[in-house]
Length: 318
Length: 290
Image (cartoon, rainbow over all chains, first blue to last red):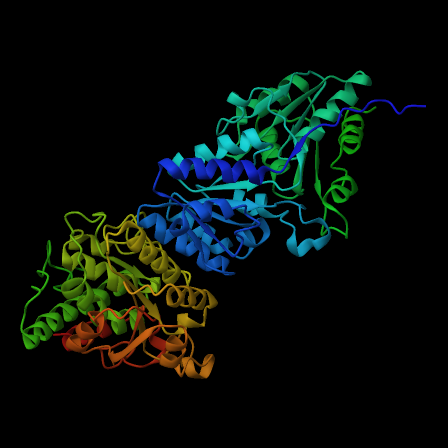
């Protein structure tokens, strides 16, 4: 008996789109430099280095210095894209992010590579599940999480012109495209409503967006009409879209590849509780992860189609 | 408290020194400026009832020499892309920096009376709202990495400005300085000068009793720096060190100084790290600072 034909969905690692866009921008904007902490390969900067050897500043394994150096470059008129694995960029350099980048107000683009649990089996030392919570607390720092290559390209273009400090979370774990119209993939500060619905809303970010869409399909089969919102700008949050979702659908499930304390779920809850209180479920990472691959761990923490469906059904009393 | 003569000056009280000037005249003029900075520091801290008087007074001669005889800066155009950059990494010595900037004409000296007052731009640590301040500093170990970035920018842009960073000696216990020192040495950033205000005291004790720094010059040399040691209160020696000819390496000036320099009862006393002088002590201090 022949197996049924399965259409394989193409999935993407956002680092390729990141580096291609950065190179394209650097060709016409001499202010753009890349700064990294020995992560030329893992930040996908080999081609940038080949084309602009002087403008790839590898400070070695020294994240605090890396961010300070970037502030000095910004003071000198350059626009640094600071690239490093997200756990080390944000954790080791947190005070430099607060003071050297944000408090100074310098136009520095912090690019957290391989965030969340992308490093899977390497364990919690190499996971970046706290970055959204830490950085959301820093005044004046934009926090952006592109969900696919089209969003990554547009977010990098926005960041190059932002004029203020920003953090971009550049995904490594492969995920499908979620942008139906690539020309409108990303607008800073605005959500993308990917699916209309009235029974409840699933608010997701990053690689959880494609899983949220799958969950909405499954919920439809159970008679629940879920709205799906892709939040690619965590800060500043598109409050109007969240308030509308709360008022129009009456229930919200959030999903993120980050700790449940202080990230997207908390940001949404802060808006909801002030403006339109509705029942919520916050899906994310609970505690330090056990050993497992990135996809295993997502499923383990319920950050899967089935996990989102279960939370939605429970929230709706079904 | 009424405004005394220490803060009663207006505009740029002193002109920058001309490039060609007799060494003894340079010394005399810088000494006069430094005395005025010290008087201002004492009074600002007394009025604010807060500040870091010991470190302010130990680094005053370095700041006066830099801003009046070394730095290519223009108070009329503080953001000139080609300007030299100065970063006070030991940001707690903001009173000395603000006083120097005001005397050099970056902002009206009358603003100094607002030091640490509610909503004043003159925060307890420097910030870029104040003309002449390049970087917000305060937490230690931040200034040198920023200076390294500035020196890389100077080279990349071919504008060739110089970058000067003043560090406390206790501050060198922060590891980020050594990340930056390694980076600057590796990249041979010869436009970068770090000045260590070597007063040998940190907040609670002597540096050598807390977490030893010596042999300090050897440490910097091992990181690829040219090291110049000098008397941190001798303006001509400071001038020579700060204009050390370029040698393909970043330069570290170890300015051997006395914490609280200029006020006898404050000098080299650990308790004056951030003690506030009483009205009588202010009077005594201003009598000495002439």
